[in-house]
Length: 219
Length: 219
DNA sequence: TTTTGGGTAATTTGATCATATTTTTATCTA
DNA sequence: TAGATAAAAATATGATCAAATTACCCAAAA
Image (tube, rainbow over all chains, first blue to last red; front, top):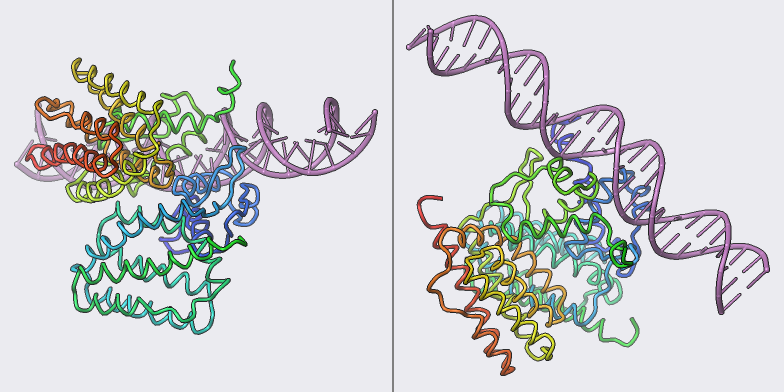
């Protein structure tokens, strides 16, 4: 067994696994999440599962409903407005800070992720699209070396993720302009303000899609 | 025993207790926090303590140091810059949204809190000042009915709290203009933009105080 | 003799699990 | 429909194991 594997505690692995399930749409909004169920599904003990759930609750990825039941929160229009406001303030700033710190390695990473993202779109692979889209944004954001803002962005994505999945699954994403190419171009040219603006435009596109879905009569 | 008391689980009480210890400066930046110690100090079992710690870690109130030790994070200048940016975006917005929703009851609450705050200042009661200052801001923010932005503000205060305590203890807060009266006036007049501006000015004052302390050679 | 360095033992602390208790939900009868 | 009962799930404790830190001792060098 490799050294690195034994170092990571089970509660951490459980957290990461459960977080990804929320982030990439394995759990639908409104879906109940039980401790016992996760113990069986993830093959973990009770303590690690409970700790993972507590962490995700305090990040807004899961929700405690008074009677000690837990579920994936459903996005309301009010919640979406708050998310939109916060994301449009925090994430362009992360992009701005990242811009001057991007080196060749991270630029190549971004381009590779963007290619895989295009592939996922071509194959109608919704989960792949969500994963690569996440990687694209957070590979950029991590370059900003701003852990507090990064944490905030992470929490915002955890609240947004499940709904994005539902929307993508329902409408696909045909016909929408590809904002990531604008982002990549601005990153190559090293213009922080333009890059921040491009990220803002990309976010707005996703937010508007979700808003459209929420405003529909059938939910 | 009243019905309401028995309903709240121990892990929740433990979380609130520990959160307040961070928020109101009972724990200093850099101070180690041990599970065993909290079990003794708070008289709780292991599971509730562990869960409370996990929640606070994911809010940035506590920090895991590689070797599975936990401590109250020390604020760096870089972290302060990120906190300043985020607070100045989120909290004035909460004030703005709260402005039109303030009713007589919450206005009276705010004025009472402000009085207790002045008392605490007069008595050089640092902990009292911190508690009333927190209540003042969050009584206002809660009126915004924006739980996501409120969560974000809560996390930002948890990261900021311990350092504010150190600063207040060291320098007091003599001679600084009282921004809360501006806030109250704007709230009474019901002008959202002015209220948001006043909150921003208040935040900036606290942030600048902490920055001054951090920039000093002796730490 | 005092000090420093290395290494081992003892202690402390964290991680995980098994289990008991309490609460909530579901079911079944009257 | 209401109340009682059974089942399921969450809460909380304590025990056990593993890892890390601290304390301590002895030898070697100044």
